[in-house]
Image (cartoon, rainbow, N blue to C red; front, side, top):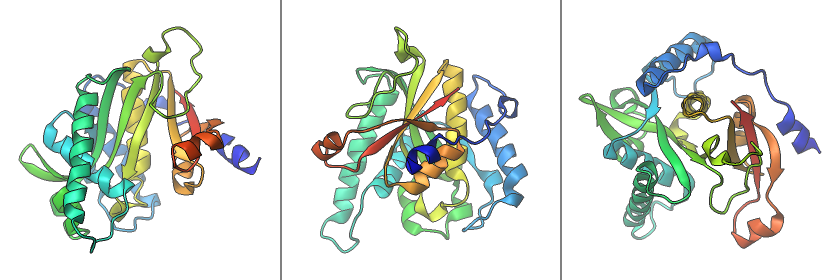
Length: 262
């Protein structure tokens, strides 16, 4: 009951007037960049990042999708640096995610109406001292500038995600038009506690709203307290949880399904 009451205590909804809607994705990043700058003085930054340099937008180019795939491999897998062939294995995993990501974004994945990869990036020159590995593996070029993908997620317009709990809203025919799921949400560990995850979620809501989405879902592991706090801060509330037998069958931690109305 403690967990449920925690997840169901939703913070105040951010006024939509703070984020004017537009079909031009680049305007999302510019508008939110201004908002981050205006509140930066109240945040505690562990790496002293200048978040006015942050850009958050949908990705359509292969080099940026590759950078996002590499960040996901770094974030979702544990590696021993001294293990034999670890670099080759990491590249293999990144290539698999890259090909799958291209398939989803291009609209070739059955069961998905639309998928967008939304990335947060910073200039290489600003974070080059943080991590050589991050800067070398998650780098791409935009308008003649080298940038690093520091946070990423997928926005999926569909009825359900494979092997995941299914959302129940809206309870109408054709819910795949207005229901969406966030997936592959991650932030580079070198830049944690800078508010990048929250910023990424808020921009993804704007993109979803522009698509006509009314009900947005995200799955989170029961024991992932930082992620649960982040989603709760962003306005997500508990809807259901995964049966223990399903988690055992899939050999993973049990998950919760969180919902946010747009």
